Structures are given as structure tokens and as C-alpha cells.
Length: 194
Image (cartoon, rainbow, N blue to C red; front, side, top):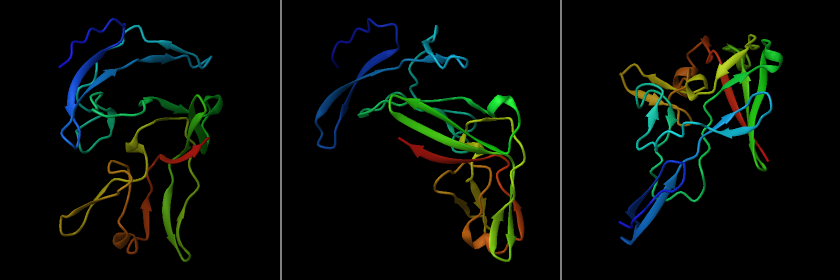
């Protein structure tokens, strides 16, 4: 391993890895944390930069909850990660049925549509969502999105491929037998914008 001296104020380290052809290479990992001023939208460096995350940190039990922080120790990562642990707030801090939240870094924008609690109803024309109930705030986590696990009659668990820890999901073979079911009480649907 090469000698590495971190002269920055940020957590960093160097480690060695091997590629698929068994060639060695070194990776330098550094992490910078910011605080967001809600009023101005300005970012400032956190006073406490913390330590590097050496293994995934989950909100709850691993495998049954989403990842709060992924490990910083990735041997090959051509781009940076941006982790946003936040709450979505309705405009003017007043409950509404749905609203859009987003983040922009440079020219890249990511948007999420937040909906209040609603249900799926099986009507003559097929499945239909009810109108959302008003919502004021929602923690942005995969647990509050559509998806999840379902245990079939034979005790075999089936997971939604898009999100294994969501609040509600039924496999196709189960949906056709249901008349009414609750949708994730607070559903997020993602969208992208550039």
C-alpha cells in the first residue's frame, strides 16, 4: 500500500484493490458533508465532518429497511454519490393532497412527487387509486414508497424488484383476487428532469 497523508479537514483514506484481470490499483476515498440552509438554499460545510462509512448503515434491520448511508469504500466509482437524508414539506407548510420536491446540483435535477395516503380499489374497469388525503410532511425514505415484500400462501416471500422495503405491494397473481386494499399510506413516485 502506498503512503497516504490526509492534509485536508475531511475524512479520507487510501486502499488497494484488484481489477477483473488481477491488476492492482489504489483508490483514494474522501467524503465532504454539508448543512443546507432551508431559508436561503445555501450549503455550508458541516462543523463535524464525521468519519468514513466503512459498511452500509441502515435505518433499521439490514435487509428489511433502506440504506441511510452506503459504504464509502467502493474500489471503483467514476462519479460522486449525493446522499440526501431529508423530509419533504408541503408548500407554505400547509397540508395538500400531493406536491413535488426536488434537488438540483449543477445542471442535474431530480424530482419526486409526494402523495398523501390513498387506496387502490378494484372497480369494473380495473384497479384505480383513490384521491390522496392531505399531507404536510414526509421523511424521504424507500419505506414510504410503493413496493415491499409479500408472503404467498406457501410461505414463499416475493419482493417488488424496484423497492423491496416499501409500504405496499402485491404480486400480479394476488392482485387479481383482491377487491380493496390499502396503497402505501404515503406514496412517492419518482421522476427525472434535466
